[in-house]
Length: 313
Image (cartoon, rainbow, N blue to C red; front, side, top):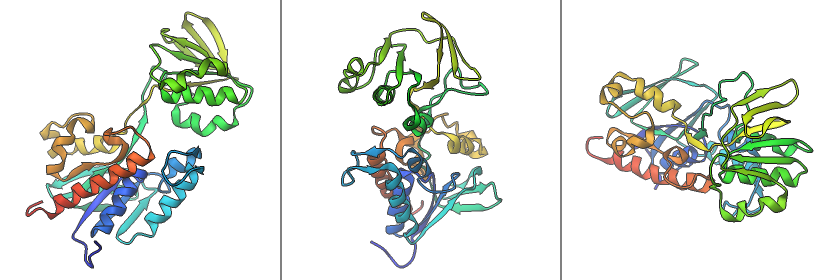
């Protein structure tokens, strides 16, 4: 369906796979979609990771950077998608049940009937988050890991991301220590390869109390292994919804009076009647990855269309 005139409008915050998928499907269903992202380009995080992947059906051996370029080209070529990248959001408002507005850092105001939050996930905070120089997080490690050779690397965490990175780094000649305060949560086929790869796995061990940056490398102390030195340290405690746009919306007087929860997924069932929707990884509906985010964007676009088509949205 591609009618000649728009049947409504939507603002989509977040130009990752979920947000882009949602915006393109909305546009193809006759909804004018404004796609907003603080990054200078759509799919910028996916492009930055640049991993060789085989999990997106139909694109075996294609890097995530190439996927990002293909997705971005599709978005730019889609009529009725107004792409606004590179201007951070300063304010999100619910002017009425059927009218939302964003104010960007450059002074631009964008209004629409429906609002889609597709801000994805961010690494979980950890006890060493406030330091002037912080350990790598999952995104920074994935970006930097191909350049790491012959280093002593400490990875804190026990999930798939931590174990997969441990195997990757060990295979490239790094001395890797994987430190998990509880049992490993990673899939068995990954965890079972640690020993053969030469990864030193410290499982069920309390976290170190001190992780301090030095001129070269890191000092790690306060745990059962005494004081140690590492060239690189990464904290891989998983991800949480990026609630930055949600926090701005909750600051709006009307929403503050409604008593919305701190985390968007906790209010998902109450959002749709107000014309606010979640798309992609921020919804935490499925295992977070490219293809589930794409599919979730499609499902969200159908929700938006039904809401806009109701007699009194």
